[in-house]
Image 1 (cartoon, rainbow, N blue to C red):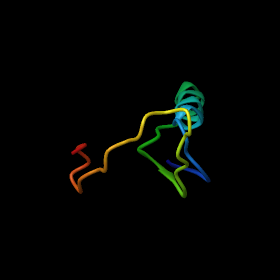
Image 2 (cartoon, one colour; image 1 turned 180 degrees about the horizontal axis):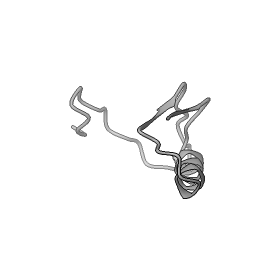
Image 3 (cartoon, rainbow, N blue to C red; image 1 turned 135 degrees about the vertical axis):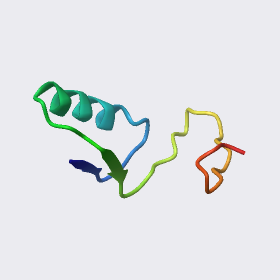
Length: 55
């Protein structure tokens, strides 16, 4: 299963949903967020390289 979320801020909702699904025996192979929100109380993030590494 690929899990789809409408917006991701911290990723907590995706992690919780994955935990519930996997506890029920459903294999989650990936997750996608349609939009990412910037938290105002979090430090500024660096840009991601295409490899997924921070840089």
